[in-house]
Structures are given as C-alpha cells and as structure tokens.
Image (cartoon, rainbow over all chains, first blue to last red; front, side, top):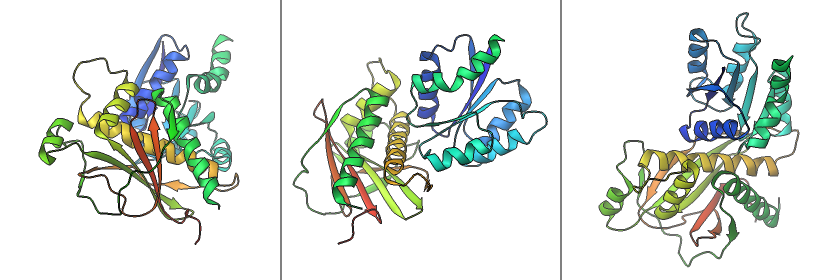
Length: 127
Length: 177
C-alpha cells in the first residue's frame, strides 16, 4: 500500500485533490491529511510516506519552506514532493523545480494533471 | 492593461474554475440595477450557524462574499459575491453532497474560499507575464445582508441554473482613467 500526505489549509482543497488522485487510478493508497507544512513534518516522523502533495500557500509553514526542509533532510530527502498552487506561473514553477519539486500543478487540479505528475513514480515502482 | 483584456481574463478564470471544480458552465450577464450602497457585513467564521439561521436572523436571504488580497507585485482586492442558494449548490457539487439536508456552514465557507483562491490565482497567471511572480493572501469570508457594490470593477455572471454571481476587482489592476 502506498501512503500519500495531502497538505492544504483548505479542507475542500484536500478533498478535491484526494478525489483527483482516486479518479486518476491511484489504487491501494492510504491518504493522510495536513493543514500546513509543520503538520506534514510531524506526520513524516511518525510514518513512512511515498509522496507528499502540498499547497504552496499555507499558514504556519508554506509549501516552499516544507519543500526546502524535506529536500535538505538526510532522512526525508528522497520523498517526492508535488506542489499544487493557485499561483503557479512559469517563473514560480521554475523556482520550485530548482528546489527539487517533482512537479508543480496549477489549481484547479484535474485527474489528468495528477496522472501526468505521478507517471515517473509509477514507472520507478514498476522497475 | 486594457479593460477588455481584464474582462476576458476574468471570464476565462471563472469559467474554467467552475467547469473543473463544480461541473457548471457560466455565461456573462448584465449587472443588476443596484447603486453603490454599503451593506451590513459580518465576518464569517467556522462557528457561524447554519445558513437557515443566518437568513432568519437577517429576515431575508443573505449573500456570501469571499475575498482575497493580491499582496505582490501590486496591491488589490478580489471578491466574489454569491447568493445563498448558489453557495449551497456549489458546495453540493464540490462535495458530491447527496443528503437531503444542506451542507454545513463551515463546508460552504471553505468551498467559497477555495473558489476565490483558485479563480484569482488563475486570473493572475493569465494577466501577469511569465517571468514575474505574484503573492496572494489567505482568503476570507463575509456575509452580506444586501447585495451591494461599494467600489471596484464588477463583472457579472450567470450559471446555467440562472444563479447570478459577481467578481469584483478593487485596486491597481483597474485601467487608468
């Protein structure tokens, strides 16, 4: 079973993102939810996770800071991070990919955009 | 920036968001004949009672106003105003709500906050050049006793179910006079 953390301060956004993953064909996945980056880091300490999907703009700790923390952590740096944002224009996407985001998706996400973003992960798991 | 460019961008942002998130098509509509009066506003929060109780407190249907600030590169305020029935409809579509009772107030408020966040992000992505970035604040919700437009540029839309709603821009994005 795969484990995915979805982080967004909006419960509606978390529900919508989760639904897009389900429709895109993610089977046998356990979803965890977090309201900000700090909650994600707490979850990571408690459980092994295969993917973090995070909103960019959140209170307490935003998606950029979360991405930096995960990628600079000896323990968590291999966990792929997908950033979802309503402010994902090309310049921002470039900045986040330089910080090693797996992909950056614009809101509203769709099952198709989710499916495309996780394709590299599915290929790796098939090897 | 020209008025017609902003108008087209607003329509694209609102229509794409509505189609993707709540499977609803929209069309531009005429503005209602309402003067620039002020309305009694109350700050919404998750402890606000159900919409029926809010309506009876005001003795009439109310409107929800979701707002979000543009912080950088310019200062502006974006708002959307929804009648209660449309707010309920949006939430039901978003959540696939099948129960007879209306969704609880906190789900409605969270849904409308996510809609303004998504629409505004999409709008700014269209309007701003590819090499610039922008920063939005966190969305917040207000409840309006009356439909009113105190200031700003107002764009009016209708859903295919004939619900009318509004998108308002206050600030630097408006074309210079």
